[in-house]
Length: 256
Image 1 (cartoon, rainbow, N blue to C red):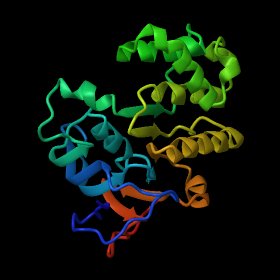
Image 2 (image 1 turned 30 degrees about the horizontal axis):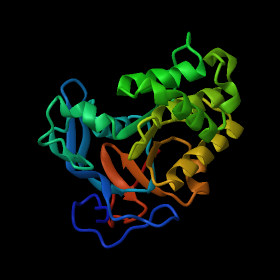
Image 3 (image 1 turned 60 degrees about the vertical axis):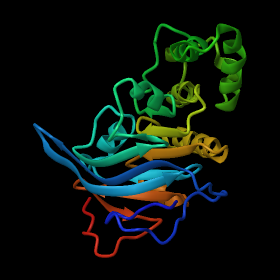
């Protein structure tokens, strides 16, 4: 399958990260709208698909609808109309008990790290493994492999306050990978970091993506977006105004 443009019509092609693409679609929005009682319409008729192994930027001004898209993906919110489908799980048929199953397919990284300040790096990751019900006997090896993957093998016993911002975000990424997720969602993961740390985190996300994990990264960093060859979805006033894999003719002009 290939991603749909904002009109919901069948697409003609796909471009994404530079690796080999699988045909498996891991995220699909079909004519999704979301309206909140207090603030009104947050998304209007949004359609797109993300395939296994893609790296996708989600961009747009503050309040455009990026966070709403992420919340719909991990089922913190449900669409007012349309369908959100993550792998085989559909918002149209999902029951409350299915939400935990859905979230085991996802890794989520936030701008503010959300680490447990009174626990070491190793304990932060162990806690995430405990929540998933992983057997204790396998935890030590798994934690060691994750810390090696994110370049923090020597920091296992450090507390978050002893780490730089970039290192804390690497811990958060390691924690998000405990379930070998199909999709890693990163919500402004470099928003609190300096330029050097930003480059390091982006490179780490690309390395994770190269292993076959789809990555969706919400960001305001347009320089980072422009320097990469990754697919971009741009949201403005709740609408998908640009999909760089499938440009939408007649899309309204984007104002920043």
